[in-house]
Length: 237
Image (cartoon, rainbow, N blue to C red):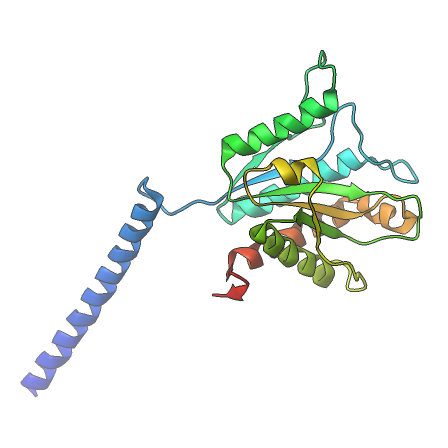
């Protein structure tokens, strides 16, 4: 009986030792990976398009793209920060990223956005925009990525799929590659442009102008990002 008891005690101590060293190893591994004594922290740049004197698209009833972009971006920032991400916004209020003396304000604005991205060195970039078109029948969110970016394509696919599943299951749009958009061409980090919907579609504009819908969009963009982070070359870990 004493021998059995001794074996049981030994096994218990061995189990505790394994648990202790396992947890210690995990903490050390995190510290080594970070190089700063703590877990690795992912960085994201969120770029709410337009701002200041540049309203972007204007909806059929007057909803301004710049306002929707900023609201969605702020909700998305809050979601990501709760998950432990470091988030950098290119703008956090209604302002353009240009000097009043600039000859070409639009060019300076875009260049400043790229400068912020380059300085932040993010893991990826999310640009928030709204779509417009001459024909009011078009609606639905669509995500764009740079033609030659595999990571951008994967991120775009994850976000597009989640926006369809969580916001509008009737949306048949697919992620679309592009090689001409300035932000896609110039960003040094993987980047996507999320066009959340069409301001020129009266029904969709009405939704885009509400805080509830903006929050819903941000939440599903966030879920798409989580799916992207939990996959490796398109295969879930």
